[in-house]
Image (cartoon, rainbow, N blue to C red; front, side, top):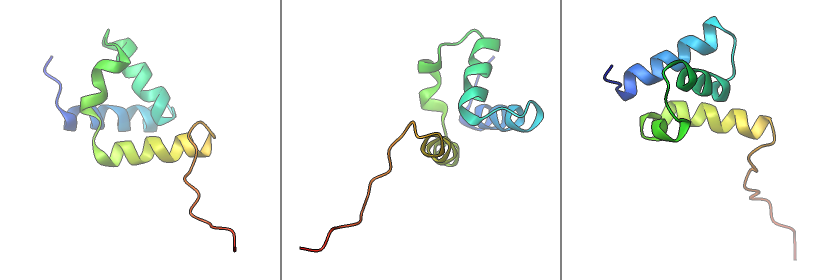
Length: 73
C-alpha cells in the first residue's frame, strides 16, 4: 500500500468520526492496524491535521501553550 499525506489524513479523519477516537488515538490505531511505527508516519501529517493534534494536546494539558502575557514592570 502506497500511503500519501492525503490518504493518511483522510484515514485518520474517518477513524475520528467513525470510531469516535481522538486524533492522537486515531493515529496510533491506524499505525497498529497497518503494522507501522507511529514515528514512521510523522512525514505524513498535514498542517491541518497537525493543528488538530496540537489543539487536542493543549486541551489534554499534554502540550503547554506559550504565554504571551507580560507582567507590568
